[in-house]
Amino acid sequence: MTQQPVINVRNLTIAYGDFVLLKNIAFQVRKGDIFVIMGGSGCGKSSLLRVLTGLTPAASGSITIDGINFAAATPENKEKIMHRCGILYQSGALFSSMTLAENIALPLRQYTNYSDRLIRELTELKLALVGLRGFGEFYPSEISGGMKKRAGLARALALDPEIVYFDEPSAGLDPISSRLLDDLILDINQSLGTTIVLVTHELASIFNIGTDSIFLDASLKGISATGNPKELLKNPPNDQIRQFLTRGDK
Amino acid sequence: MQLTYNLNQKILDITLRGDGLHFDDNRTKDALLLVLDTNGLTGIRIEAAELGRWDSTILALLFDIARSASRRGLSPEYRNLPDNLSRLLKLALTVNRKPDTGTDEKLSFLEKIGAKGIAVYAALAKGLSFLRQTSASVGRFLRGSAIMRHVDFLFALEDCSYKAVGIVSLVSFMVGLILAFVGAVQLKTFGAQIYVASLVAIGMTRIMGAIMVGIIMAGRTGASYAATIGTMQVNEEIDALKTMGFSIEDFLILPRITALTLTIPLLTLLADFMGILGGAAVGVGMLGISAAEYWHYSVDALNMTNFLVGLFHGLVFGIIISLCGCYYGVNCGRDADSVGKATTRAVVSAIVWMIVATGFITLIFEVLGI
Image 1 (cartoon, rainbow over the protein chains, first blue to last red):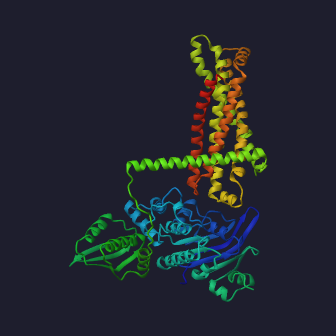
Image 2 (cartoon, rainbow over the protein chains, first blue to last red):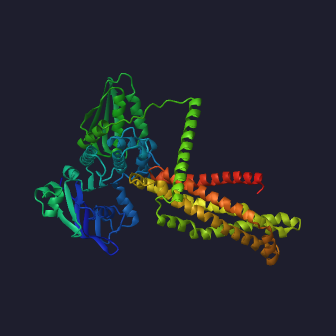
Image 3 (cartoon, rainbow over the protein chains, first blue to last red):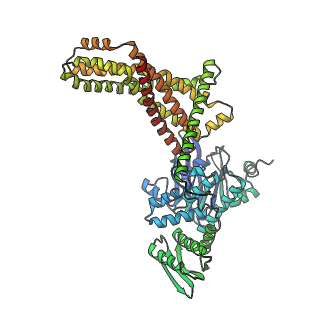
C-alpha cells in the first residue's frame, strides 16, 4: 500500500502561549494508510489533531495536504481542503436538535447540488454502511454512545472524503463495539481507499488496523518513534514505547 | 455516466458505463425502478465492466436496486463490479440492525385526552416533588444542617446584586418616565398635572418597581440559573453530586434561592427610587412643575403600606424566579438543545407565574383592605 504522501507535516510546532507542546515535528501520511498518532496522556495527540484539522493554528511549520500548504492557506482554500476531509470526534459531535438523517444530510445540502431524493438515498446508504439502517429519524439523545460514534462516522463520510480523522474512536466503547468500529474503519479504508488518521491509545485498535504510526513523547516534545505499530512492538526503539505497547509489562 | 437497461424474457439487464460521479438522474432512476416493478421478473443482472470512476451516488443507486429487488425476493447478479464497490455494497446490505420502535398504533380522541391528563399529572407531581425537596432544604438551612458552600452563595449573591444595578436602574428610570408621560397626557386635560408625582410614586412603589425587577431578573438571572444547572446536567456533574451523596437542593438550589430572594427586594427599592426619579425628570423638565413641589407631592403620596406591598411582591418574585430557573435546569435533558429549551422555559414560566402570583396577591390584599 506504499503510496505518495497525502499529508506532509514539516517543522511543526504547537504551542499555547509560551508553553510549547510539540516542537519541530515532521511526518508523512501516505494515501490509503491508516495512520495512528499515539502516545501517553498529555503528549499532545489531540492538539496535533486540532492543528491538522485547522481548529487551532500552529505556532510554526507547515502542513501540506495534496501539495497545498494547509497551515498557510487562505480561509477559502482551507475550507476547500476540509471538504475533502471528514472528522469523527470523540463523542460523535452530532447536532442534538437534528435527527441522524438530518445530521448526515447537512453537509450534502450545504456543499452539493444534489436533488432531495439523492440526498435522502445517500443518507440511507451512509446509515446502512455504518449499520444504522432504519435509525434515520432517531435523535442523538435516543441512541447509545457506540451508535452516536457510528452515526458521526456516517456524517464524516457524507461527502466521500479522501481523508478521515478520528479522535479516540474507541473511547467509552465496550470491546465488541470497539472491534466493530475498527472493522468498519478497515472496511471504509479498503473499499474506498480513504486515508485514515487515527488518534488513539487503544492498543487493540492500534494493532488491528494501524498501518503506520508516530509515537509522541511529552518529555521530548516530539516524535520518539515512527513505523508500523506491529513492527514497533517487535522491535521497540526504547523502553517507554515497549512499555506503552505492552501495557506496562516489565 | 450512462445507465442502460433491457428487459429480456423476464430478466432485467442493467449496464453501467463511463465515470459514475455525482449521478443524480432521477428520471432514469424512476424509469428503472418502474421496470423493476414488472410482474414476474425472474432475474436482475448488473454489468459494470465499463464502469470507470465512481462515488457514493453509484453506490446509492446499486443499494436502491438491491433493496427493490430484495422486496421481490430477487438478488441481483453482479458482473465485473469493482471489488471495492462490491465490498461496500455488501457492507451496506448486510449490516442491518432494525430498531425496535414498538407499535405505532393510533390513539383515539379519549385516549389522547387521557394521555394528556396523565402527562399533566406527572408534570405536576414532579413540580410538587421539587418544591417539597427544596422546602426541606430550606428547612435544613434554617436549622443549620444544610450542606451549602458559602462561596456558592456569595457568587450567586454577587451575580444577582450589584451586577444587576445598572440594568435595573436604567429600565426603572425609563418606566417612571413613561408612566409620567402617559399620566400627564390625561391629567393635563384637567389641569391636574401635578398629580403625576403621586401617580408615579404610588405606581412604582406598590407594583411597577417589583414587576420590572422581576422581569429583568427572570431574563437575566433565572435564565442563567437554568443554563448553568442545565449544562451541569449535560456534563454529568449533577449525577456526580448525587452519587457522592450530596443533596443537589442544598448544593445547587439553596444558594441561588437565598441570594435572589434576598436581593430582589433590595433591587425593588432601587427600582422604586429610579422610577420616581424618571417621573421627576418628566414632571420638572417638561411639565413645568418645580422640583420642590414634585418632591412634596411624591412624599405625600408615599406610604409604608405601598412600600411593603412592593417589597413583598419582590420577595415572592425572587422565590418564583429562582425556583423556575433551578427546576428547569435540574430537569434539563442531556444535550445542547435541551439547555436552550430549559432556559426559555425558565424565563417564560417565571414571568407567567409572577403575573399569576401578582393577581392572587392583589386579590388577597384587596380583600384584606391593604
